[in-house]
Amino acid sequence: MTQISTAKNSPASNVHSGSTSWARWYRQWFFIPFLHNRWLTKQACQELTQAIKQAELGHRGEVFLVIENTLPLSSAYYQDCRERAIDLFGQYRVWDTEENTGVLVYMNVRERKLEIVADRGINKQVIPEMWQAMCDKAIAGIQQNKPIDSLKELLHDISDLLKQYYQLGKDPSGNELPDNVVYIK
Image 1 (cartoon, helix red, strand yellow):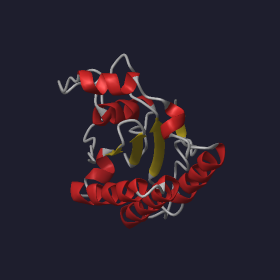
Image 2: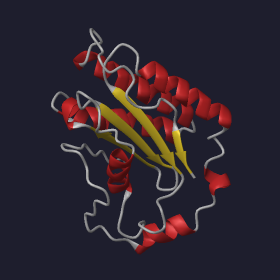
Image 3: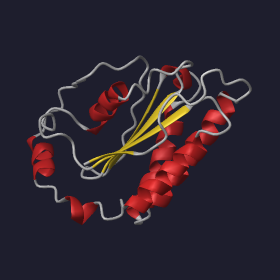
Image 4: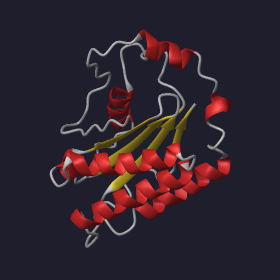
């Protein structure tokens, strides 16, 4: 199941919706990384970093990709993937772009969840169903054991969307966020 979260304002750290779950906590505790993340090689990270660089060409938006093995055990009981994505959106300052056009793509390997958190600037333009369609397409590819290709295609789709609303023209700030994939083990 895919969940999409969109940040209308700059998110605060440690957002909690009250969705506590011991089952979620136990799933994180008993996760064996090498059984589930074999696809995330050094080469795959380089390909994804290149895809991020390509996704940021031709528009003023910023795309940020975070792949995390598990939710942190200290917060997995009360924090789901949506809340974690919003937390990372704030931690990595994706919201802190000049035109509020930052988009965070968050993938949790253990929970098999994909989240997109977009800043208020782009959310004024894009309806939630568009983000949902993009996630559904990427999740379908990931379930077909094509995670790298699916994530690269998702980044490309986000880039196309940003090009519609934030054409390059004049880019006073340049690249505001790092382009490398963030992998949290």
